[in-house]
Image 1 (cartoon, rainbow, N blue to C red):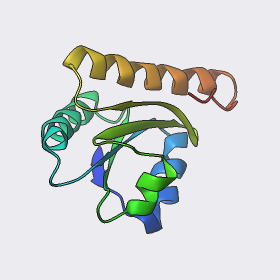
Image 2: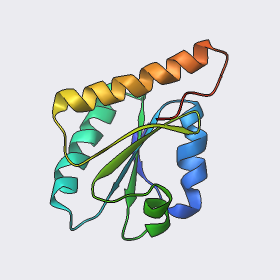
Image 3: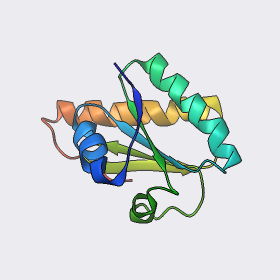
Length: 126
């Protein structure tokens, strides 16, 4: 099973919003020319593989999908947005430490589990 995948605008609702009901989805919005993106994305991919489906990583090329970047009010790259049950629950910009990334991911997983225990109640937005 693939835990990270590319997303284009036409399939954003299906591959991010809908899938975030089954597991948290982190949306990694970046660009090929962005040096911090070229560092962060492989680290997120490795974490997605290590977490083995406890969260999914949706990668968005902002140059090819400007409406997704605009929809999220992206002001710098990379921007990572966490979705849980169709709701944005957190975000960060730029490259981050391993401990920050794990904490961010664990928070999204915890929010997903909490809404599951609350019979699917919507999580609180960020």
